[in-house]
Length: 230
Image (cartoon, rainbow, N blue to C red; front, side, top):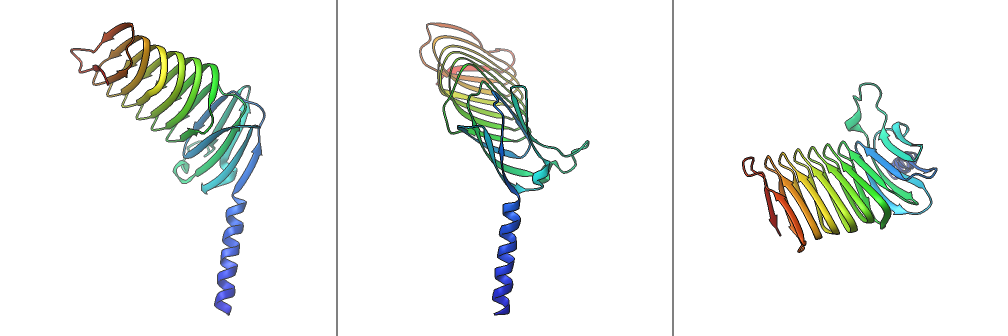
């Protein structure tokens, strides 16, 4: 009986500790998002708020601040950031509209609602991963340092710049006019319907689908770049 009571008490305290590390934060409106560190963000359209589940570390160190139109989400680890790897969180983030996302330092962002915008910017670096569905007149994406960006949807214009082992996958992103620049082992997949400008160098590769009327291709003959149709 005593052992059963001790087990029940342990489970209760564990649940209490776990719930104390979760939080719901109401947010003012934002149109840009910046995320960094060991944070996984699931995006949903709705009234702006962040539903937080702490996986590891201190909830008080998780910053969700809106400055101007930008929401920044990161762990505040002090001047030297010594405990950066000891903090992990999962967040359900609700937004009204978005026209830009920046992901860095190994974070993960996944969109579960369609993002509509006039112009949309998607930047990823340092091992971050982003996956979103977007409809926009113009989409610009910079990917570097081993990061990965996956965008599906539609756009009139798409501009992609990938370097240092980054990866951009837009084979399900139907775009009229595409401008893709890749270098240093980066990789790009795009879908162009009207025009394609492709520049690949230093081991970078571009694969495209569609039958664009106009093409301007530079495969970096002397630096190992490649451009080919899927």
